[in-house]
Length: 396
Image (cartoon, rainbow, N blue to C red):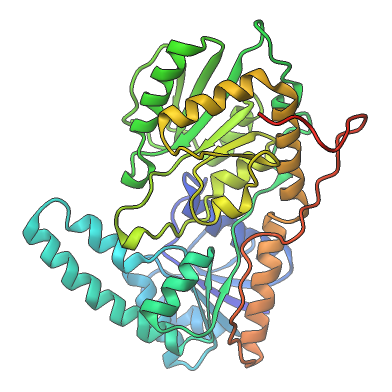
């Protein structure tokens, strides 16, 4: 199948979730034998590269059997419009409600700016709605985003495929499996994030301060792709900044717990629409995930089985959970193993690309892709007990 993939593709090596997502899509489509046409992405081997700009967009569209456009900025609006103009089957990929997100942050804190942002919101939403209604299908990463597409964009052909991870990138002997607890063993906790507002990196500083007062055997590693992340300097925290995505396995293989924290949304009608790639990477690495119980995260993580959800989504609540995990090493190891198994059997990039390519093939064949049911978690967990241990373990 000849696939036109149009996205203002950032640099490789990938340095954040959106770039990782795009790179995994492209590389695995190529590995599956598809002919993938892109705009000048020399960093992704095996793709058919075209020149940048509108002329290149037209070349990609004309060469493709089906066009996949990841909506992320102005160039994607042009790309989707060209696909429709040339009557090519169009699948729109939407990883965030880009119209509202851009408008909201552009308008804060200026009142005048907020008015301009509202006008931009209405303009972008109208343009995006028109494209989505004419597309063969809209592909999203979370059920909340599907609801957004239906309610605000009038989409009737929405398909949900959550993001994934890759067990092969990480050690087959994760540190979490070797954690024994006790006074001589340090519990290593990983925080991965950025200075973006929805990451709320002040959470880590508050958490590390509280933990330092209670348990000196719990230490933190804070990683950011940004060269100068705004992170508080604390004695129980090691800071690693300016990393690339390829650097992470070596860091994760030394940690026991991974934190996936997001503040409860106060804008976008409280909508949490993300499918965080770091969640699936933590799981693939065998870390015990401690996560905010928001959106898809609360459906992927079953508290006490493959991670822990924060009933109290605050630094105080997270401190209590970490202290419990430090005191229950066997439960921590089991949850890490279960999470790793979930990625190897379901939440992996091969499944994501296989489902997406099936959707693209059906679009290219002119099938009706109207759908009313979406799944963004597996229905039946597959979690074998560790050898020599009972299936039910004490949970913190």
